[in-house]
Length: 425
Image (tube, rainbow, N blue to C red; front, side):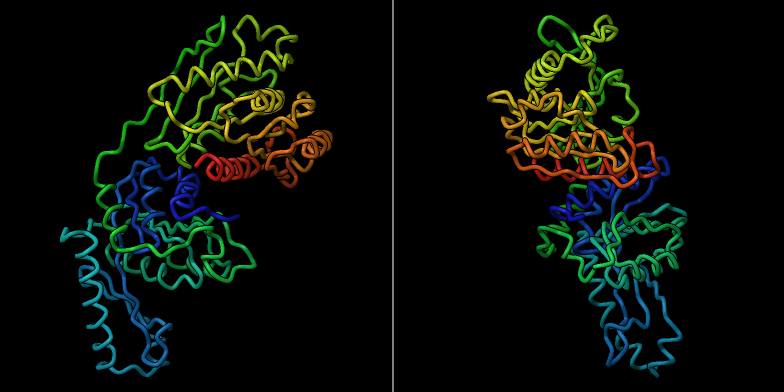
């Protein structure tokens, strides 16, 4: 798993923190690299944000070994074992603390523009960084938050070494990290863009976080698609970077709980979603309509035209997410000359129902199949060979056709979010 940049990592990390939304958490970014990640988490959860400025106290002669940490408000956390083992004198400790305190005060004042830090007393806080190699800075932040009387501490990072993830559970009430690869050697290894975050970026993001978020669209819509009117549900998060139309499978509808779960993951990644019924109530009882791929593709194309004329979605790049027969409809619509679609994702799809059209698809296409769904896996492997666009087949180990196994749909959401984020930006 790799992230496009820190903003992408924050959107995808927020998907794993949705359970905290109802607890009114305070998001705390670790300057500097953790702030862009924290900003996206805060925007997605609609939560307030601040920075948590900490400084490690390095042991004399071994600066990477922390003998303690300091934070704002005179918070001081010491490690007696390191102090004794390093034979650190009171004078050495005082000098190190004095120097680091001056650095901390200057940075905190610059980042906040002189505003006081948010009171953590009794608050549920989420401490966010861009990754954890050793976890020493994140550990210091957790200890400082604890000393500032935070009520519940969640440490959230997009990627960490397995050792760091384990050690951080000693100081945080909860650790959320979706990726702990065994081949970890540096945080930047898992980012396409890992340029250094500047002080100006931190200041700008903190200012934006204090401003009211743009209105979030979340409404039922009536869609004109040729001679019929279709029902749909449109969601647009603040500053969406694209929008994904969902084409459901046979026997399903816009109320599909599986598609809703994936849609929430995409919303968390900063993408809008439109779930809609491909057929009217009268049509959906006719099995001939349910498997009429040309009709479903035409409805999808008509809905795309309707959506792009809507003021809320005008100008947004478009993606298609199709399930089962809906995947065939998505691919058939994408194969049409002049199609505006920029990316396609199929979940447990039946691309064989549009096999003749596959070479005409130009949009980058991701096929997601359960590892235990052997007949559909074989059909998708055949379809992959027919596609001429940028393409990939992702197999979710142990998953069956409906991805009902624990964690299977979450993986689908992560895969789809990454694909759309990469290709719709």
